Amino acid sequence: MTDYGQKPSLVGLAAIMAAHERSNIYRMAGMGLEYFGAAMLMGLAGYWIDRKYGTWPWAALIGLFSGFTGAMYLLIKEAMQANRQFAKQYKAEHTKAEKAEKPESKQPESKQDVTDETKLND
Image 1 (cartoon, rainbow, N blue to C red):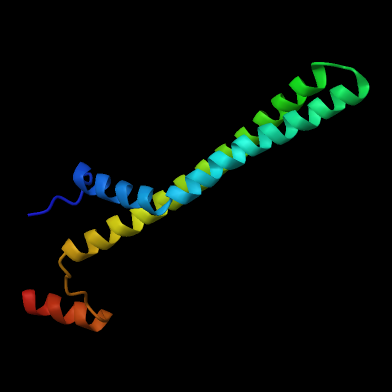
Image 2 (cartoon, rainbow, N blue to C red):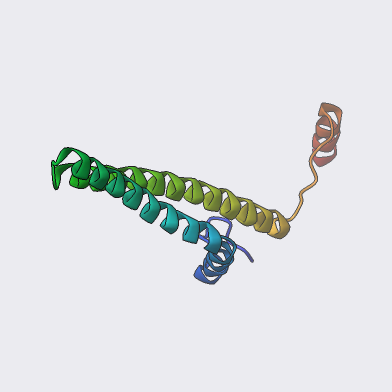
């Protein structure tokens, strides 16, 4: 008999997580390139400003810092979106499994059926 209050097994959770990881490998690689690219682009822009105005190393440092900060923001935003998608997928899988296990009970179709059943029980 199934206990409906029971938490899902770790094996099922691990299988869902493995499938999720395989499907998002390119997405994660893209996020890493995006992070690196943003930091390098801003760092190079700062380096160019330093060379032009002779402010070495301040603009390069500010550029690198702003690049890392902006990239971190994008990384967190993507991670939160991926987490929401994973939770939605997990909930759908878990709900589908619960519905498959749960036996269907006969519900009275109308109020008349309820009164007929109570008369028969009396």
